[in-house]
Length: 194
Image (cartoon, rainbow, N blue to C red; front, side, top):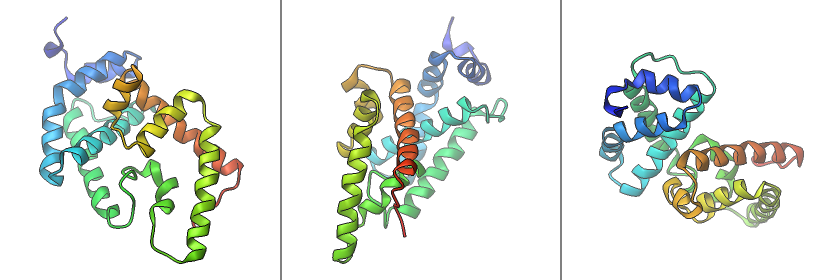
């Protein structure tokens, strides 16, 4: 079956019904437009790549949770998500480290502030060791993706190439790693902000 004949809305419902390949077709179909749009706003290829990937993390999450209702208007909906992430980036970029590009990474934002007094530095040092300890408790595949993304600053595409699994699998592992980290943070009662 030719991909160009299948409508966006059919592909979206196929993906929601478990056909992973449908999302890849949608991404391939619209990548140039979305990528070009983001690039026109940020003017940096690597940042564009990250915002593009974060856009699709949000798209996947929304579709998987059954919260998509933009019938037949997939591209404008994705463009709005991308636009909001660009705005978020500019809002956060002055005070948050570069690996903190989505609301999912809030747990690390406190670690990126290298200004501050001795007490702050001590607290950060304790947080680093606590979070490093928590990361060790994650399942191996989730830990691997999280480490590559945050500490090695690899794109999801690079992680996919390095691990030999699809981008969807990488995004899924990252999502579960963050969910599990939130649970572990709550369980260990780690206080990340004042």
